[in-house]
Image 1 (cartoon, helix red, strand yellow):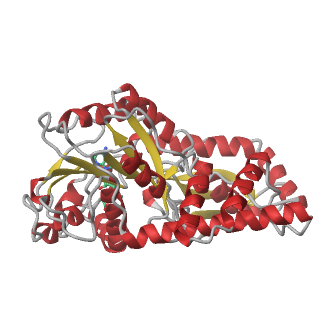
Image 2: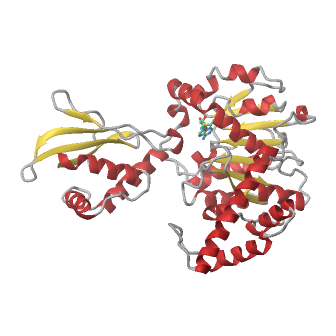
Image 3: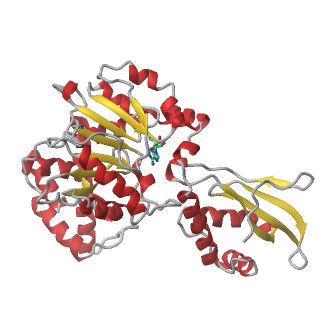
Amino acid sequence: MAESESLPSAGRKVEEAKVSASPESGSTSVAAQTLSAKGPRQGKMKDLVVKLHGQDRNLGSFPSKLHTDLRHVVEMLRRGKRPRFAGERLSLLEEALSSSSYRSMEELRHQIEAWREAERAAFDADRYYDSQRTLGYTEHNRGSQETLTRRTLQLCSLQTDSVPNKAENILAVDLGCGSGLSTVVASNLGLATIGLDLSSEMLRSSEWGEVSSTRGPLAGERIRGDLAQPLPFRDGVFDLCFSVSAVHYLVQDSLARTAAERISALTSSLRKILTQTARPCTLQAYLTRDSNAVESFRQVALRDGWGLCELVVDQSHGQKAERDFLYLSQQAEDRPPRCVLYEHAQATCALALESWTYRTGAPHPVRLDAAHRAWLVREHDRYARRMLRLHKRCETGGSLDHSAPLGPEAQTLADRLAAVESTEDEEARLSMILNVLHT
Ligand SMILES: C[S@@+](CC[C@H](N)C(=O)[O-])C[C@H]1O[C@@H](n2cnc3c(N)ncnc32)[C@H](O)[C@@H]1O
């Protein structure tokens, strides 16, 4: 399939379609242009050109009346979803694709995946974050990155709603620090924090002025380095390592090395640079979007000598959106329970992890802030009530609305919830619910 590297020449009619962008997810904007031409049999034919995964791609010549639907198809396939078409509309698209070089929607999907892989393999954070992207990123993500960093540090056993005692004695490194939105939180808490990032523009951002004015020793110190290479620090120096929205970039092959080699450069050197009494490391990243990412990371980390590499899913912003955290600990005979709320990701949750760290006498237990803990408890309670309602409807043959009937495992769970439902002491009831939901 030929790819057009540049836009079509002047003098031909060009129509532009909508742009949607999400650089953090590794996805690219889709802008489509169409060129006028005459098709011999199907009426007016036009080349369909979409900007996809970093380049303009000429998908070939299609009837112009199908272009809007085809753009929808491409966008859905790019997002890994099925196009929402059926009946004759779908048949027309399938027919048009069958006489193109793709032959079918399935082949088009394979091609889009191949383009995505090629783009990810060639990804270079230093090139990607130019001055405009750095500015845009920093302006738009200030609040959300601050919240994510607080959650990350709480999993590392730092109290973030007050300045921790003796924080000055903690030497921390922020891996993939970017323009300092994450570093500033740690530095404000009084931690001596060094940032590391591959992007020169991110490290040059004026945001670092704010980091430098915080109370933490070493405020504003940062170095340029690649997380996919062994970390450039002496052994046994850091008490705390954390990362916010960065390490998912490692879980992909580059042009020269496999994802496993890139992850291992981080996980093996990360262990070495920690002191013997260091806190667990927490790496917030976008991992569950890629079905193998967590397992790849876990396998490499355990092979590199980590005792535990657990996925924690948290609704960090007190909303529906879920965020992924990898929790790495050097010692662990046991692992925390899974949380039924995040069963789809086979993950534990911040509440389950917190109580597990206290129960097992971990030297650095999770320290959620009170407001977020209370929100999470309410969410668990809401989940339990929903499940009980559904259970009762299943038993009485009532309407399930749009819910699927409970399977055998869920029924057992609902029976256990029913058994604690009427406990009068509210605190005891909630605690029993958490016990049931954390399995
Ligand atoms: C979404 S930003 C997050 C920045 C910051 N932690 C925050 O919370 O705002 C991701 C950062 O990861 C950095 N990054 C991506 N791949 C990297 C690599 N291989 N080595 C070091 N930094 C990398 C990028 O340059 C970028 O600054």
